[in-house]
Amino acid sequence: MEKEKTTMTKIKAGKICRVCGGTEFASGSTAQFECVVDGDGKFVRFLETNLEDAKKATYTGPFTCLQCGMRGTRLEDITADLTMRLYEKPFDEGLTADEIMSMIQEMGSRDVLLAEFPAKTHECSAMGFIDMEYEATLNDEEKEALGDYIAWILDDMNNENANGLYAFGGATIKLTR
Ligand SMILES: [Zn+2]
Image 1: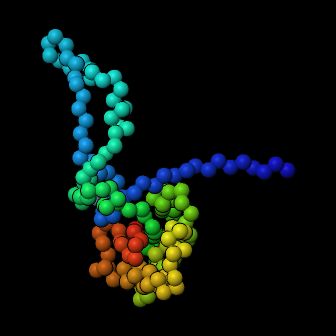
Image 2 (image 1 turned 135 degrees about the vertical axis):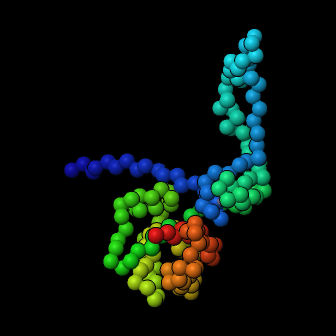
Image 3 (image 1 turned 90 degrees about the vertical axis):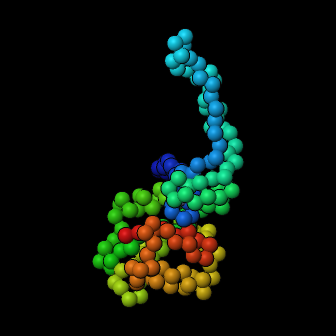
């Protein structure tokens, strides 16, 4: 019997603004292209035929998040990989296909583990994925602290961030309803 062939699609999840989750950053770089005009002074074309070359430039910054205005000298100062992507769910509800697809998009082609963190005083939990490499760095105490932190958000709406992003112990967590 022949083994069925499977095609794996690599999903590239980009780094996001660690403050707001934004995905576009002004680079501080500008490109100049000489314009060719006709005898009446109207635009005809750009003199350079290959504008693609401009995209290969090294962008040096400083960088500014277009969404929240966060600035950094280096991109890595203001961006982060999503370490965990979670949805808040009442005990009698599961994850929808759309939610699972969007989590896969946001985590990209990394090895992830399923994760569920129950609230302590409400009948709900946070369900989703955690980066496997990050999870492996946590000792039992840190795992407990992480669970306590997620429960702290679930149990009190006042602890919620409007953008659903949280930073905890080196992890960037996105938790939404
Ligand atoms: Zn931002």
